[in-house]
Image (cartoon, rainbow, N blue to C red; front, side):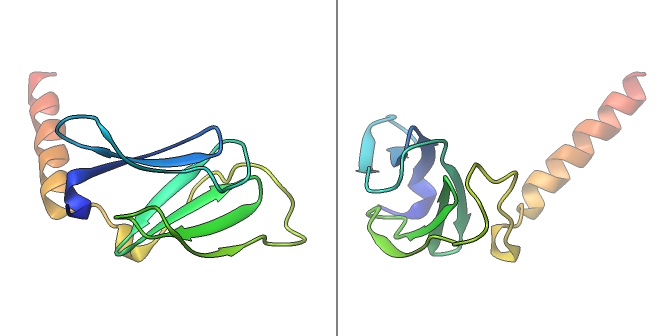
Length: 107
């Protein structure tokens, strides 16, 4: 299995990976603190944030590589996680530009 075959979902203190074709659960990690989970695929790392904690997971297995409680920064869900490795592909950008151009012509 490769990362491209997975869809990552975060909810209720869980991070999960689903098979993108079947929807079957490939792995589930419940070792994080409970709450809303925000995920970012950063190359070969899956970054999960929940209740003021940051976790680095192995994307193919869900195993925790490291975690950081970010003491002194409070708790809650982050508004965003950003990485230069998590950039949108050129294909998606080209499709979006084409859709915008088509919509402008129809107006």
